[in-house]
Amino acid sequence: MRKSSVRPARGLTPALAAWAILPVAAAVVLGASLPQPALLWNRSPSEPLGLYVRTLGHPTRGAIIAFQAPAPAFPYADGQMDYLRRIPILKAIAAGEGDHVCTDGGTLTINGIRRAPVLTHDSRGVGLPRWVGCRAMARGEFFVFSDRIPNSFDSRYFGPVTTREILGVFRPLSPSIHSSGDR
View 1 (cartoon, rainbow, N blue to C red):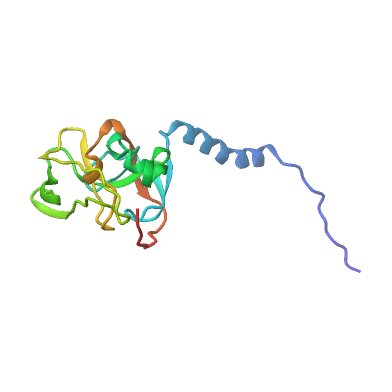
View 2 (tube, one colour; view 1 turned 180 degrees about the horizontal axis):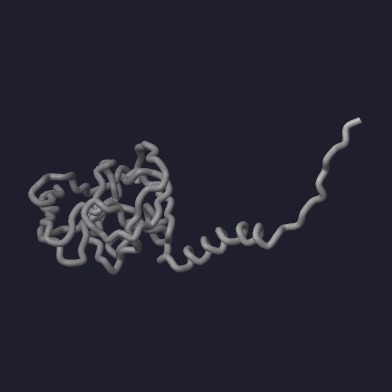
């Protein structure tokens, strides 16, 4: 007959408890000390879909920033994208200080390069707001734009975003999921 070797259950030792609690405590402290929001979920196809994490980076051309929809986005956004009152927008910076941006003649031009049309109506026939300008971006101004989809709601419609409006610089955490769609 074989003897079974069953050990009596041990309680949680202080060392094991510390190792179990330490990561949770560190996450709480770090989460509370980082500027908020630290994570954002992007559902708009104008930038790669998925989870984004805030970085310590500064807004520069090509960086993806989060910001609350500026006042010129409304009332259009209230009727078509009411979630913009609650959820930040994620967009890439296409132009910053010193870059020359024009939206004259229904075309977006950045530093003399034609980038995209400026639409007058969305796919439902609703009139879009429009930023009209032809000038260099000032210090602390950023023109956000996405060419991933033809109907991205970006600075062509609400104007440049200022440093004061930016919630942070973000990068995707999850792989891009390709999708097409309307705003």
